[in-house]
Image (tube, rainbow, N blue to C red; front, top):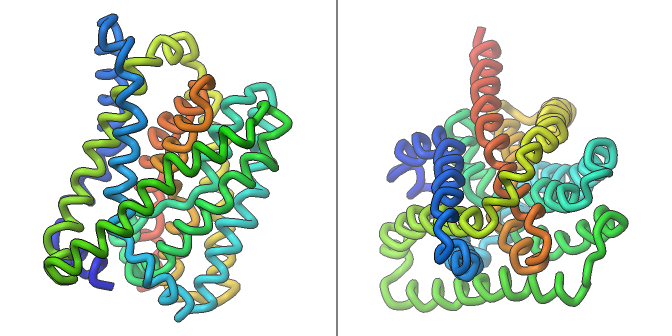
Length: 334
């Protein structure tokens, strides 16, 4: 895929460095938002920036994804079916068990945990795959399929796993999904087709994709700042959220990593393909889940806060996992 070749040729080293410090960047944005939220004017109006910033960010994410290439994922049936089963069957079962064990008394955090953990990543998992010397092209082939399936199934998982914990308004949830996701998705499909027709595929890959990749992070940071400027006091009154989420999130990554490695051995994937399977079934898509949470649960800020805190745990874990995978690779050569 042209997009992946571009990532390998241009900016991969830069993005690797950015991802190493992404948790720190998110933490700084959280602190900045809380600080700005002490100014009454900013606190009162910052909430109006959250949804627009997230929608622009998602537009920039979606415009990079060639949905028409969704068929390419089925060139490797073994990998694709295995990844789909782990992401959309096994993972929700594990999330259900962990959620009930550790978050049954924290209904809003349970919803946030579910939304975070059942949405496979659509961007930075490729960077971690590259760092671990995995098959980036294979991992990218399933990206469009992961995106479509999570958009369709996320409301189902929320209802099945979280319905008994939080009163979920189906109409509000449906509107939230349509408004926060479908609008940016449709706009990105139209814009992508229009721009490619004007400047050509190669120039699109060389100019639009790298810029979109850069700017999506800026708008995510803006949304985080706005979120904590408007809701910072809630976080300060609930600092235990991070500790409450720590154990189930860590257990999710430990269990799924071990399970993914065992499955890779069982179906006899080579090292590069097994890395792709591990990362595409471990990395989570907090920006998409956050957009839905903001639109669907505006009166339940702890759900959104859980989705912002999640990556503070996730990203260092993913970086550690890449080091473990590289260690396994070095042992295989001996």
